Length: 454
Image (cartoon, rainbow, N blue to C red; front, side):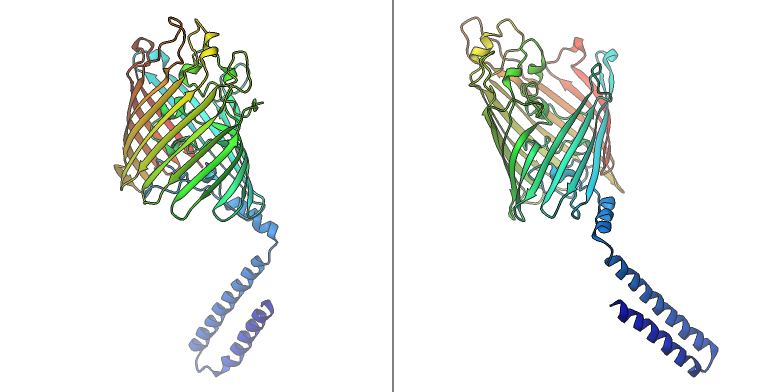
């Protein structure tokens, strides 16, 4: 083809030379020459394009890796024209495709300020988290996905910060609409756990139901099958590690703050005698509507006999819905968990402030309105009501030895999300806790935050 192009160039120049004397005046001759020059320039550009097409595959792959950008989060609170496709795992949040051998990077982070109104001395500013992620494509069907996270600015033996691997798994497509993953993965429950970037939720802090009851970000190691159908159904089935009830500390408050958060293992030398399984599904067959739910279950005693929890089983189930008609964004979620065979363990914890609960639950409703939009910016006020109880019931004990259930906490949160664009958000909200102690400064507070993703 390059030979044909060179011949065309020569022919045009030759014809132009023959035609020049035939022109009656200089103006016509100049016009003809300029036209020939334009055609020659166009043909040169075509030749240059063919040179690029014959460049080496490695060069093309490097170009793809350099220019690829992350796909926007699928369950975003940022302005959308309707509910987007929610894939079976968070790999759909940030990981882009790309040519074989390409690698893409992204990240997100948030800085928060919390000010209890009753005790200004407890006001606190924090670089809550910073995350870097990567996606490497081995071939058309296989890739590796990972996220590295740092919390509270500094991680050391003398500081409260943490450094951790949030996700790390290999994914292989078995077909056009289904595949398999193996590694450290987020548990696909709720609206937040897989879509936890700060632009994806309203308010400075993540909601309490999906942090105290579903311990976002909750991750387990294992193997999972995922897929979706043309009818709008996506699904995820997995088997792997689970929490370890042998880690329960009845002397600390952590179990009251989040029962599962206090015993999840995060694949850090995780005890794995007892595997857990989970199943989750989301349906988006109607534009703007998302309906879904999931269940997680498995023995969590991990063979521990001191305290005697080897028979204990966790079962946690949730349902959720999200509807985005026009400028409105409405969502709701309910989750309930149960831990069985806790009587013997709690007998060993008599007199301690935090026995193992038998039941815990939570739910919320939330409404947001994209009230003002100009250019890429949006102002979205929102209101959320949530109720949750981290120990709504304890297993029966001999009379006089049992523990009283905890009171249900109810939280109202009202605020504004200002999206500078789809990747940067500024936040303000005010929270009212009904059962918190005003003297300790937790009854009411206002919060400020800024978050980003790239």
